[in-house]
Image (cartoon, rainbow, N blue to C red; front, side, top):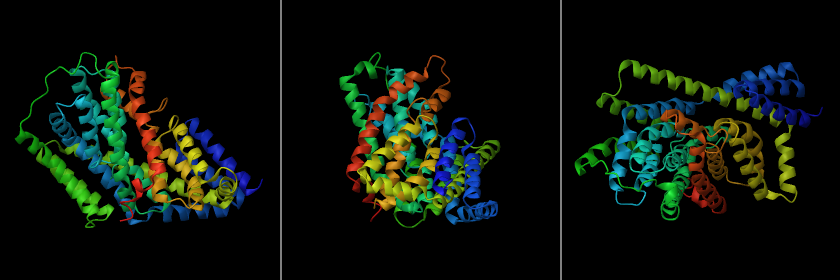
Length: 436
């Protein structure tokens, strides 16, 4: 077998291993080791694996992962998500389907201080869905809004997926964060427009009994009081990051410390809860860093086989061209999103796609935004739909069917596809801030 044949076989074997249930990190390491051993020899394979383990994880940048994860978990525990929703539902009480719009706004703000979509889905399924049901909204709309708007957690910075992409593509995390602002706001606007259109054209989809129940009233002073922690964290993290005072790792440290102060001041954090959060942070961090290590080894094995180079020539020299490649890439990611989780998709596809995008002269920051949005669509599509299953688990309602949540998410999938088309056609939407 030629090195190219070995590289293609390694990709196919990896996909099969993942589909039969092998953890992706173990599968990648195994396939990469065997691939390098077949292309060269066992000694080279061992040396390359040890070198990758050292090179891929020694950077100071990786401290950003546990810091942002810890901040997100502390924010969730401290009740900031509920306060955010309370503020927006009070401000938008006179808007038709105002609770749906409030959920999108609250998710956008919550995303700016957590960076994890699953955290958003968990928090707002417990806060927003019961409130919308009480006001006569349908189950499918209530859960669909939460599922759809939860994807903002991975687009509006800080974002865990943005960090993973930046590492794999060897791009600046700060520039990736900046690039996520415009598309994140575009997605939020698309979701709001979708809700308003549904409330006017498909009232049976949105309402069961009409938006008639009385809203929980909070005073102007209470709105200000509930807004203080939210604004404090946003100014601390985003202000420091975009103002140039803090790099991403320092912003993560400042955010985690700020979230810890809020949790302590609110007395929502005891010793056992704090220990559980630290353990969970460690588990998430180790799993992410192990996957990055495995993906780096996989990428080097593919480079050794020549697969990315051959595919670049095939895509760019024929009739397909750069945009044909981009369309095929997006369709592949959305299809994979029906089967496997977000980070796994990126780890499998990016080592192959990045060299092609680079050879095509495409901006890798813009390409990263396209990648994250396409990957996030997979959080809403059956049969995997991680956000959908998270909402189902968090609601703990035996009468709520998974299919109903998937149906509720369909309009928001369409809104994401439209947003993706806009960003593809007009790259400055994603790159104008990153280039400043």
